[in-house]
Image 1 (cartoon, rainbow, N blue to C red):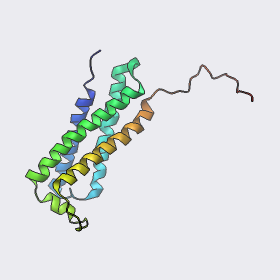
Image 2: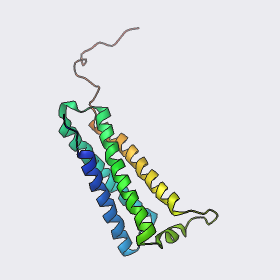
Image 3: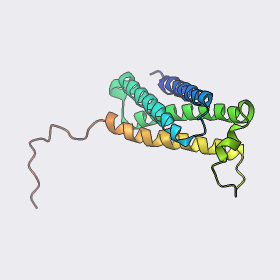
Image 4: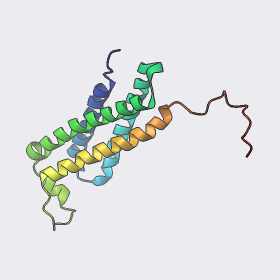
Length: 157
């Protein structure tokens, strides 16, 4: 059986969505406002849901919890890696004022560099992927409530 391309395809599409959203926010000058991070969650949630749904359709009878879970994780991890690479390039080469603007609201007692901010962005992406994949698999997994035991009598103790 051939390997599925869904995690890579949707990972790239999610990353493109995140990059376009981030650049749109930067055009209007609100990219440092943390409230707009909710948009990232919506983009990732929509992409992961669609990827896992299409993966289930593709695999049909071969679909199980582990395969669906791994497809969701790989999709989100691909998107996170691509966006993190873009974010690192953006912060270091495209808009070097982004980091000082973003960190202006943080405590100045700590020296926070580009590396830690990029690392935090990656961890946030991985955590979002993990939580959303766990949540969506509750929708896609097969039910353990079988109808064959519907008329079974309760055990008497």
